Image (cartoon, rainbow, N blue to C red; front, side, top):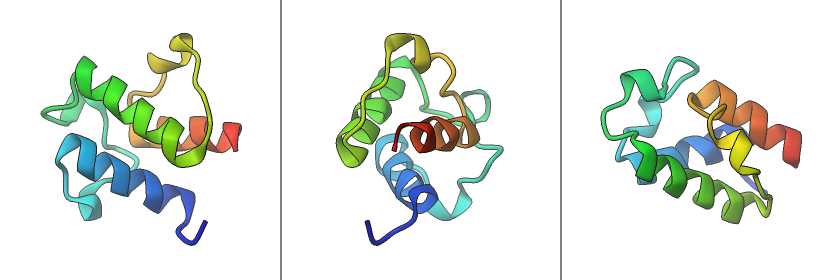
Length: 78
């Protein structure tokens, strides 16, 4: 993988959530990101699973509600 994990996640979030990747940081979360709803949460997780060839349990979905937590979850799987 040529890009680091964090940048790849930012790029995916940018596409799925229609955000500027440069503005995504550890504080970016469901609570402060318009458009990050339940449908886009699923789309984001599916994109992460495909990009990193990993799989998340449904129970993990509810924990992945910020950039910081998503990075943590992805790194635990790769």
